[in-house]
Structures are given as structure tokens and as C-alpha cells.
Amino acid sequence: MVMKTLGSKRTFWVTITVFFSLVILLSLTAFKTETTVAQESTKQQLQGLSQAFRDIAKQVSPAVVYISTEQTVKGQQAPDQFREFFGDEFFRRFFGDTPQDREYKRRGLGSGFITNSDGYILTNNHVVAEADKIKVTLADKREFEATLVGTDPKSDVAVIKIEGNSLPVVRLGDSNAIEVGDWAVAIGTPFGLSQTVTAGIISAEGRSNIGINDYEDFIQTDAAINPGNSGGPLVNIDGEVIGINTAIYSRSGGYQGIGFAIPINMAKTIMDSLITKGKVVRGWLGVMIQPVTPEIAKGFDLKEATGTLVGDVLKGGPAEQAGLKHGDVIMKFDGQPIDGPNTLKNVVAATEVGKTVDMLIIRDGKELTVQVKIGEQPGDLEASTGSPSRAKEQFGLSVQELTPEIASQLGYTGDQGVIISSVEPGSPAEEAGLRRGDLIKEINRQPITSVEEYNAALAGIGKDESFLALVRRGENTLYVVVNAQ
Image (cartoon, rainbow, N blue to C red):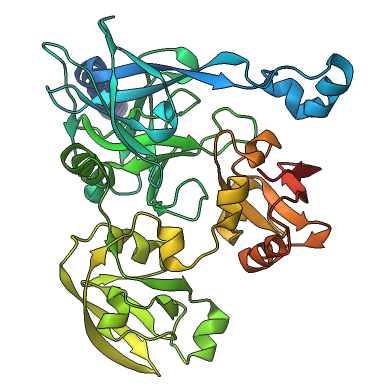
């Protein structure tokens, strides 16, 4: 009896052990299977993404072109790096004066993309501006001489044209449909390395106050963009062009994770205008505007610091005819909220000339809706707005306010001055070595903290007189003498 009981117990525990061993074995097998399935799923997702990038490259790259330019320049040819460190005075002192009418070739490179089978190519103005010759090379090694259709320096957009057969073209997308976090692919010719493809995401939208163009509504991306990428396409995951790669934020001259592209919707409008009208036609309101700061909002009894403050209304302009007054705060334009001067400037410029739109404004604490018929922006906007243009005419120099965003982007946080927004080729400002992005801190030993002070300082300079400027460039500060023309 005892032996039978012991045998039964032994059989019981053996059965239990075998049972749990099978359970553990089956669990491990299931876990291994699930892990393998998960790994395969992840692998398939990565392969799918990789395939998407391959498809984009195959689809878009054939229509991305390498642009090389040539310009004949008169004057003294000194390498930029030597001029930057030693200056022209060094060369004159030790090597004597050289003929100012000597000609040499200045060459440049960039990127572009073919938008239709007629051979129209979108690129940047700074890639082809002032070029005597423009050569376009396709991915299949075909070479063409291109003609300049038109340029728009205010947005840095240009259109060139080639004549050829069986030209590949890109598909243009909708830049209004993008969102932060979307995939973005940049294709171009960085450092002359044609057909280079890089990938990243859309980092931000609506970037303005960068100090690059007059009209800024940039797409920001971390897809690697380097010198030579200018004019190339920024593409979404569907292979549609959503922007024109235009600029990078860099203290070294190379990629640092921040690149800017012109939205394709803006570029399309400019391209169509250049092709059909030979110029860019923009809407015009006829007001002088400024940001609504927290201090201004408090002074005007506004609930929040948003909208755009009208500082002045130009005589005879659309705004005056609509009854706008200085001190009005524009909150909406044609139904679109206005969060600052750049937003208003961009939406007005994109509005069809002759169109009547509703504007929501705040006047004396009350909301009003006024209707305004948009006019055509005059060719010389500076003269038409009454903003001082003497500095540009006499010295080839344009400046703008140093905003906190620009200061942060250029590394000037905590400093004061005005930012150089453009320098005309061959101008006294260029000959003095001034560059776009330089910070002017003083004029003739007088501190400069605003555009108003800058203009006042230049107003006291005679027609044939030069001026001394204290300039910050990156981490360096230097004095520069700008001679009158």
C-alpha cells in the first residue's frame, strides 16, 4: 500500500513537471516567434522607407540640374580670403596700384530643377544674377546654354530656360499642406557634387526675420543643405517639390542642421508672373507697419501682442482710400489672421491687384471691418513708401532692424546695431568688404541701435564724404571705411 502511494505521488509530480516544462517551452517559442515577427515588421518598415527614398531619387533627380555661371568683372582681382584678412590697402602699399579696368572671370555654381517640358527651370536669383553665361547640365550629362527669363531679388527666385527634347520634369506640390515633422529630401549640387540626395524633416514653417530676403516665409529643414544646393528642390515623401533650397544657418560656411527653403507656392506665383509678364506683380496696401510688442499692446489696451500696427498711411495709396489711419492695428486680412508685419507683407504681396478684401482692425479699442482695393506695388518701393534710400543709392547698402530672432540666428544675441540685408555688387559697400549679415554697431563713432538712428547718421554725411563703420561679423569686430561713389 505504501509503495503504491509513493508511486502515485511520483507520477503526479513527473506529470506536473512535464506540464510546466511544456508551458515554458511553448511560451518561449511564442515569445521568440513574436520577437521574430516584430523584428521582421520593423525591418519591413525600414525597407519600405528606404524604398521610398530610392523612388524619390529615381523620380526627381533626372530633372535636377547643375548650374554653372560666368561673369566678366572689371577691377582688381584679389583673393577674397586675402582681402578679408589684409584688405586692399595692404596690396596697394606693398604691390602698388593695379589697373581698375582689368577684366577677370567670376564663376559660380548652384542647382535648379526643370518645371515643365518647355524647359523652364526654377532656381535662386543669387545663383544666376549678373551672370553673362549660364550653363545647365542634366543628370544624363546633357549640357545646354540657358537664357535668363527673369529674376526677383526680393524673394531670391529666378527662372531660366533651356531648349531641348525629352526633358525630364518634377511634380510641384502644395507647400501649404506640409506640417512640422514631415519627411523632407533635398537634392542638388553641394560643393559641386552633382545629384546629391539628403533626407531630414520639416523643422519649422513660416520662418521670417532671417534677414535674407525682403519677402520671407521660409520652410526650415534639417535635411543637409550646403553651398551649391542653392536653387535645388526640397521634396516631400511623395516626390513632389515643396520648396527651393535657398540658405543655411552656419558659422562655418557648412551644414549645421538648419536650412531654409522658399515655399513652392510662393515660387510658382513668382515664376508664372516672370514668364507671362516679364516682371513680378505684387499687391500693395500703402502703409508703414511695425510689430505689436507687449509694451505697444499695453499702450493700445490690446488683449494680446498680436496683429500689425499701422505707423503711417501713405498719401494716395489703397489704405488711405479705404480710410485706414495710423494707430490702427490690423488683425485679419481677407480672413487670414495677421501675427506680425511679415505675415501681412507676404499676404498682401500675394493678393491679386484690383481685388477688394476685408480687413479686421482695432481702432481705439473697437473692432472694425474695412474694405480695401489692393493696388499694384510700385517698382521702386523704397521711394514709394518714403523710406530712406540714400544709403542704397550712394553706398549700395540696405539694412534692417536687429530682431531677437535674427540676433539668435546670427549669434548676435545681447548686441545692438542694424543688420545688413543686401550689398549691391560693385558698390562702395562691397568694395569696403561689407557683407550681408554683418552687424553695423557704429557710424562715425556714434552707436547705432535702430534703422532710424542709422538713417539719421547717414543724413549728416555729405554727398562726397565717406563714413567709418564699426562692424561685427560673427565673433570678430572691425572698423570699415565706406567711400562715396
